[in-house]
Image 1: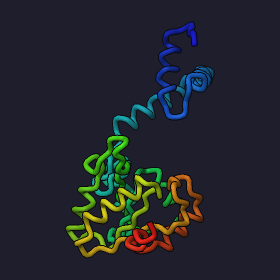
Image 2 (image 1 turned 45 degrees about the vertical axis):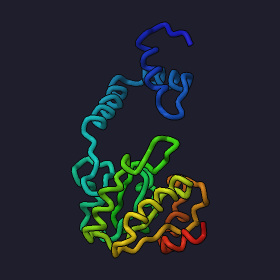
Image 3 (image 1 turned 60 degrees about the vertical axis):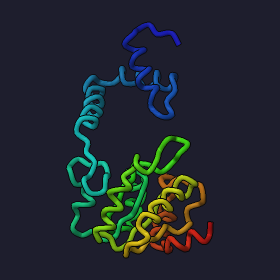
Length: 206
């Protein structure tokens, strides 16, 4: 792809690094932004800079947050004794959209995947185990995607905490095996949260 402007080429190259964005789509987006009022393009650029420089990870659950404690963890009407373990913020958003869950979350930041070079130490598993050891949690809900990596991560965490007095459950398999949580419809996901089952039962079915 030949460019008449080095500035245009640089912008396209940067845009094409985004997931699902090829060079042609990147060019179309960049040309679209050039047609917009300068304030709109500058507003987009500034919002991305602010996001990069000011975003925080919640000190309690590791969710993305504007403050040191996210709005969910800071909400006194939510139960901190009930914790739902998820992969990332997209799963938090998916579960919150169901309006069926009133506990806290713990965001792992991924799932164990040796093929991708991701091990337990690359995730926030240690801080979750510490919460369990300190008696801060009554029930832990495993809500990772029903993939091999998700099941491996669930089992690893379960083995780390099985000697402590905490109930472990997993979302009901209204979510098809192999599905990513963020793509489940709200009704199905909501029912899966409500009808969760003891984690040990899910091991017997595998």
